[in-house]
Amino acid sequence: MMRLVRYGLMFGNLYEVSSEALVSRYNRALKHLIGKETKLTEFHIDICGYSPEIGDELGDDLYLNPKGCNQQFILLATEQKTAPLLSSKFSRSRSIIKDFIIDNEEELFALTAREAVTGELVNSVFEVSKPSDLLRINQITIEADTVTEHVAFAETLQGHINRFMQEDDAWWDDVLIADMIEIGKTTGDITRHPIQLSPKTYDQGNFYTAHFGGMYIFRDVKFPAVIARENPDGLRDMDVDRIYTFEDRKQIAEFLYRQNLIELIVTEQSEDDAAIIQQKLDFIVIATAASLGDDLGKKMGDLSRQHIRAIAREYSSKLPEEYHGLLDINRWASHKGRYPSLDPVHPAYFYAFRSKPHKDRELVNMLLAELSPLDFRQLFICHKQAFYDAYRGWPDPKREYVARFLAEEYMIDKVAARESLFGPEPTMENLVTKKDPFVPRVKVRYKT
Image 1 (tube, rainbow, N blue to C red):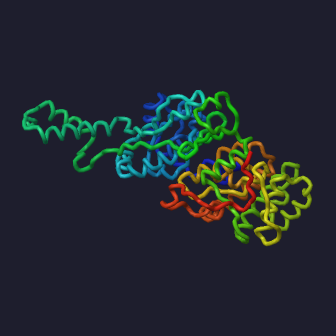
Image 2: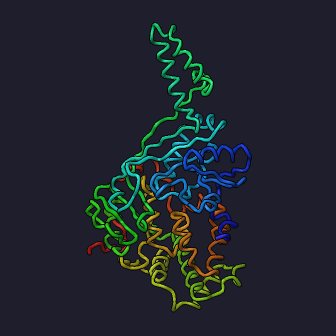
Image 3: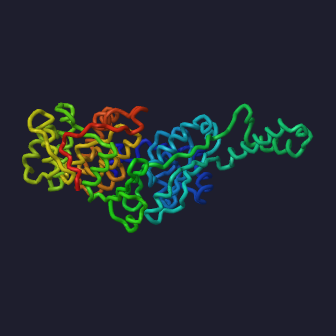
């Protein structure tokens, strides 16, 4: 995995904690939350304050996420908002904490200038012991304050001020005035510098969880469904009419299409669309060659289109069905073949789709990435943990090629690459999924 770290593909964009003051603040916050401290003098933290170095030191990657259920956080600076989230078990957690930081940026900037802000993403369960527990998570509320309860004291002081201003005899209340003076020593002048974190509750509608092998919960749709990577005990006990595993490809395809969540990447003959499919073909060729023992390292200096074609010819009899299905789509898009026909059971089927522009676009693309795992670029973009898990099992030549490709091709212009693959970012008009009369021309057979 160190190769990914060197190329900036893992643990990238973390916030560096190296000054004595910040380390001290972090330790006070850590002691406040979990009763432990770090002996490290330098480390890096993600958006929630989790540090992979400290996780290794404590032997606990979930030290800020007990039982993988209630995410705690330590904020040392508002700059953490751009960092990734490494220790979460739920897909919505990063967006929730990022929104919280942005919504309270001025207040958090003032608070973190003096000490760390700690808190928790609180939901309605303390442990996920069976799949049905996931359906009890309906809302997430953020509770936050400094270690010395600066926000709580400010709220108390504001209450005293209101009482002092409204009650006629408050001028003669020595106890009230003494309390105001004492609390003010901690909070400062809150009339000039108000300290109040906006409380906010976030709906937990459609989401992914890493629990029970990985599950996608779609309940904020017309026909709710659960799509599980595996078939864990208790899955069929969930109170949802539609329960599928990754083996139920036809049912998943029908669900995604009928809920108006996906669209074809290629809808007309276009060289640009053909280029997207061609790259997916190249990835499959490289994966096949590497799995068969080809030492791609010798060719790594110049894996041009010509070289990849030569590799494809060399291993033509070994290329999987995914390759041949996508090749039919590529031929048609390039004006070189007839219109393709793919059934959901075909291994190439989900490679041909992407999410429509709606509020759950990232979630749907995440699911499609898992259903088309040979496209390592989409897997890296949409589901990094699944990418890292797959990477560990790849032969070394493939690891080197993938790392170099992502570093030299994708990371250079991520925005353009994402727009090419997934279309432009959804607008406000797209956030509500609308009925779309478009019927994909790839012959989709949904009947089971």
